[in-house]
Image 1 (cartoon, rainbow, N blue to C red):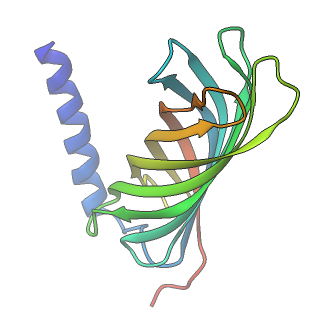
Image 2 (image 1 turned 180 degrees about the vertical axis):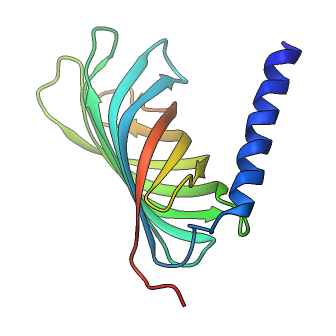
Length: 183
């Protein structure tokens, strides 16, 4: 266990040291986007969800972004919901200003198109989400990311209300476009 922790610490320290010697990628005007498969675990039931996750984020400043996320629900046998597609929009604060290893936190309200098992009508469900994670901008054109999220909401068409609370994790490779020229 100690060896695993030591390896993880050394890898992150090495990434941080490397990023300090290279040109900074995170600047005002950076557009960041990615697509991946996200996994979710319900906090109310013993259900796991799988989503196609897409994200678009624009750096208003080097530390503040506007961001939109979409989740396309992939139905499996253990889910109570037939449909649970979600769309979020909000802001994120990025902590690192002198490194290409950039942790962040944020908040995003959103909407879900949900349909409970066996019902025929799809409903719009309001959601709120808190996000956290990090990006490692390894080069000018791409980055690695880990994104964790807590989603909270209730599908209200059935009695009693059906909670849609879950913890999600997405990770992978994303791409960057600098929309402003360097000064």
